[in-house]
Image (cartoon, rainbow, N blue to C red; front, side, top):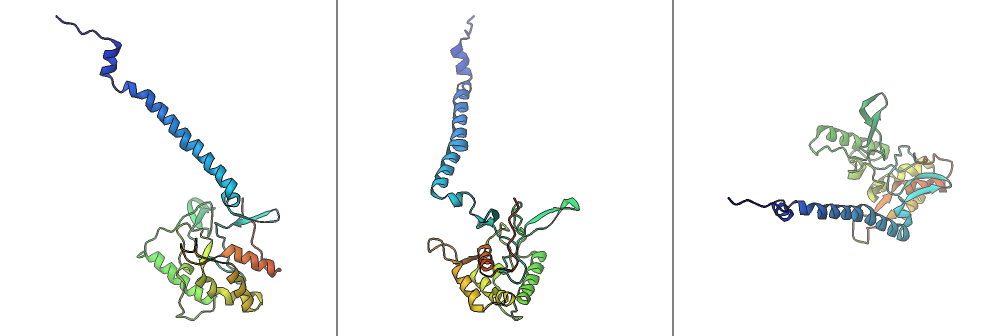
Amino acid sequence: MNTLEITPDTVAAASPLRGLIGPCLRGAVFVALLTGLVYPLLTTGVAQMLMPRQAGGSLIERGSALIGSDLIGQHFSDARHFHPRPSATSAPDPQDASKTVAAPYNAALSAGSNQGPTNQALIDAVTQRVADYRKTNGLGSTAPVPVDAVTASASGLDPHISVANAQAQVGRVAKARGIPLEQVQQFLSQHTEGRVLGLLGEPRVNVLRLNLALNAAFPGVQQAQPATK
């Protein structure tokens, strides 16, 4: 009777996966170090050297106070300031942790409403916003309303509004501050940003930047509050 002699080579031939364990582990460690450590450190270092302000969050400071960021909007509702677009962000209900309450421009919980165009709650909300926008800015009952004035962005934190939206608010801001309409118009023109690279997007206005400029030029009105750390 023939017998099968078992040798290390025989075992290796019968278990081909054993020879792959070492290379797989080494490959996994290499990829983890490359993509999880080397690449992030490299890109962060290059960004800090070439664009330190943008890499640091595009923060806006006044003296030692952190006011906010160019990238994150803030909520303004008084007549003397330009208003941002609606925000769908929320926050935990202080009375019931299992629920949430509306918290416009809550940077800790960026989100959209996720409501579709046929959602009745969204339809009702937009209808009410249109009426409120016209009333707040002294517009006629049939005056067109910019879409960004009554709809929230996907992030809920969009710092910009359209030029048409800002233009519709100029009269209200000028009247509330008691300054000529032309002066507010001039500030708006100075803070209108063009298309990216002259091609991408549409002209827009950073609401926080514009309001801060107005506050600096016309002190004595409510100032933007320092951002919560």
